[in-house]
Image (tube, rainbow, N blue to C red; front, side, top):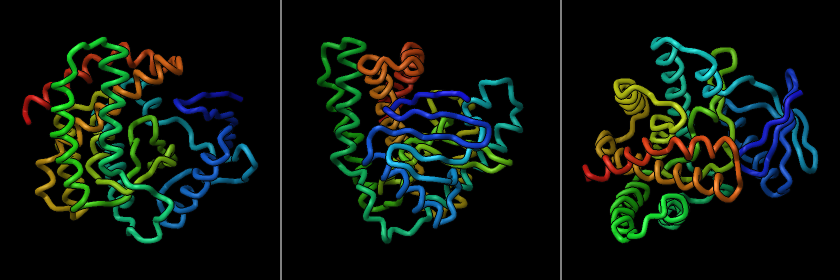
Length: 277
């Protein structure tokens, strides 16, 4: 038996073939169950729920996350490419879910886009870095938010919202998505940015490009959106740094404290992309 905590208030008790997901927030747990049922009915790979209790559920143990696999030892380029192409294929299927009977999902709209930037500015720039002049960051945020919002209004679909290597598990060679209860109606570029600009795994640039092209070829989305990927990349990365800072400074989460201390590269990535706007 092993007990694991997460970035939220949830915890997991891990047995050989079962996991007990404990959530003290009843509403949050009920949402997890609803979303799991929604995805299962649409044949999206998520862990099976065996039994439901008032404050916890018993689910199938699928094994290590992709992040844990990658950290357990050096993998070949072929292994890495194979894994990520399979994720891209599953993501295309996920993003193809019709937008009907999706009332349980809120919208990744102007309000949420703006909140993510304020989350970043308050927690990372002000509280962590101690930046004094943030006026230019509000200017940058307006540019990125407006582009992302306009894209969302014209092209929307269901998105995972946190699709990175800690939230993908390969079981018998097939990718499964976890931690999906934050799903929203948004734009697929946010999920692509979450996966490819993963702060935990530094994917090679050539592979990011190949995976982006593969996604667009298989998904049928308008290729003109390829050119605005950069804006969603920035949007996603500011959310990441905001979360790292908040969970480190206010929740004292060890995992995020480590990544916050190593977040300089992510911050430089944001600045370099902003220069290209």
